[in-house]
Image 1 (tube, rainbow, N blue to C red):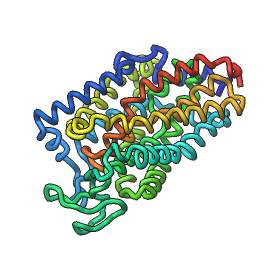
Image 2: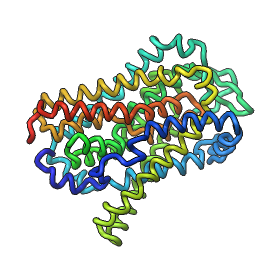
Image 3: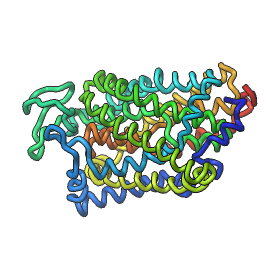
Image 4: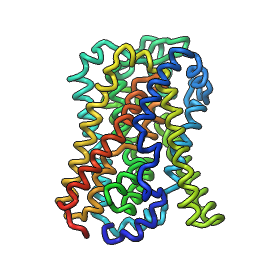
Length: 402
């Protein structure tokens, strides 16, 4: 969409023109404080998170949706979805090359490189450091009723506090979280990265919208396939439910409320006032969720403080590899810099809100999978800022107009 920068800038309701807000600029710091606060909470008041997570919607006697977490995650997702202008999605066909490049990177390449890189590091190179015999307790797949001692994939059904759980190798649980990150492309933050890199905001917004729609069709399919390859639980019903709760519901709410607000207050008020008010809501909901996550995983982190490093290494490599592939392909396709920069960064960034939500729903708040998705948040901001600086330094490699 290099020739449509005027329309794109107007369409970018996320308002990245002001750059990173205080919350966004120091997101890594806030996440770090949540780690400390969550560990402290788990030590000082270990029953609080358990009681909150116990407030759940049960299906067939099994807790499927944690109500407090679902509320927090809805408020993480809704501000992203309400920014989507579906008219821009319809007009995306005018710029076929950058759209196709982004879709191929996000859905045909990225999930599989994430699986391969994570498997290499977590299952081979770092397996001894994580603990070859270390295990993790995760939720039984929704609708599955096996006797204690039964084998399912790489897990064994066991009884924990009177509830049937699957005991799986810890490194495989971390692998599951990485898989969920790898199939969740493009967060709303990519609008900020695109603006800071002087990219085409319109193209970025279009791909946020298209990826949100693609997730409805492909997230569960790819997630189920790659989890199955990794000999992990394949809870197809829960995958479908997670897409409905954490993607379809906020997407529908965003679409309806966006139309209503613009009709009632005008588009200028929507862009300049309403969207601006939502950023702290998203970050606050994210941080509350992380506080609960780390209150559960405090003992694991204290026992092995290098856990976060073992998970962060493959995530960092995956981010850089996908960015390099996208940036090189954009150069080969002779895209303008304004389209090349966001096309590469959209693939490199992750929709960590959906990944966290799905990991919590599928495997549990205290699972290693949930912890792995949180590590994705921890490294997202500094790595993407590094890539933004690389883009601006190499702008001369590209033409200014497609």
